[in-house]
Amino acid sequence: MMPVTQQQAVLASGNAGKIKEIQAMLADTLIVPQAAFDVVECEETGCTFVENALLKARNAALQCNLPAIADDSGLIVDALGGAPGVMSARYAGWGASDQDNLDKLLQVLADVPEGQRSARFVCVMVFIKHAYDPCPVIAQGVWEGKILTHQLGENGFGYDPVFWVPDHQCTAAQLSAEVKNSLSHRGQAVQQLTRLVKANGVF
Image (cartoon, rainbow, N blue to C red):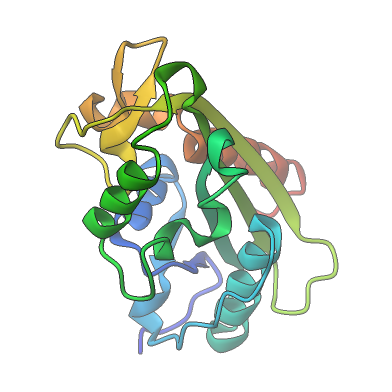
């Protein structure tokens, strides 16, 4: 287990793609993934993104005795009534790979016409000073787009290869990391969270 210092905050995520993106966006803050502290992950039993983000943050803060940052995010597809939603990482079942989830999404949307494939990525990000912090800082980002019928691009992770970004006429997986981070739901949430946390004099 890593030694704890007051200058650190633990990032309550085991998703390599998320960790890479968040660390890049918070480069001026010492953000350490929870795996470095041997954190036992909690079960994501919430019905909403904010519930799951808080569950993860409190779990990591409790085990590490550190401030914690956590996010919960997912893809909301209008034609599917909001699915996959909070189940985005597990859409094709527990232990599903990104490709498994992509394949299921494309299969379910196979008969949905182009004009009805609107979707958005949503990210809720939270910061807590300690495990029992009664006033968590909560930020949210939303990234509008639509779902293609096929995959394009090699960058990013998750549903990026089928998420069309109208303003750039490409998928999220065809954007550079820098451009994606400036546009994405997670980038918006990080920027908002950073402003709120600094306003509270935490970092």
